[in-house]
Image (cartoon, rainbow over the protein chains, first blue to last red):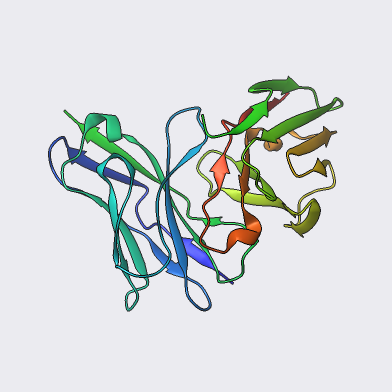
Length: 114
Length: 115
């Protein structure tokens, strides 16, 4: 069975500092990994994904994520945080089989202070 | 705007009521999903439809009944709900046959309160 773990309920950073939101996964075969962001009372917005190729994936709003197969991790990063980045972030995984749904982690709340 | 529209945005219903949530996607996708998001809990996958056929049902109580009349529309029929069913219900769609690497697009959600 596939699963995702986000070990931190909350991450606090100061504006302008780099941020990392952690994600580890478990899946049979090659993983397809995704990051989403959710603002209050809104649906989830797609940020970026890893399918194959370069381990560093770049996405929307200056976010990037690094795929590490040996550590089964897919951490979300941004070099310089903005207050407007404060939101709930979800990591998700889909196994090799097309047509199956994304399985999500429990989410990490990112709080960026000015 | 993601191309996935959910109505209503907010719904308050009594435990004996019957109501339906609606989801519509304008993206030409052929897979649609219902997720439940409760406070302090992971996103729970409820139902998966691929090519209008239900392919997954994650042990959801029968008081939730999905319907997918065509590839653009998905409903969640609700009856005799419990207060613990209060949550944000999210609809999503993806190009299911486009490969496992395709992302899902989400609607804004319906905030359901059962009183």
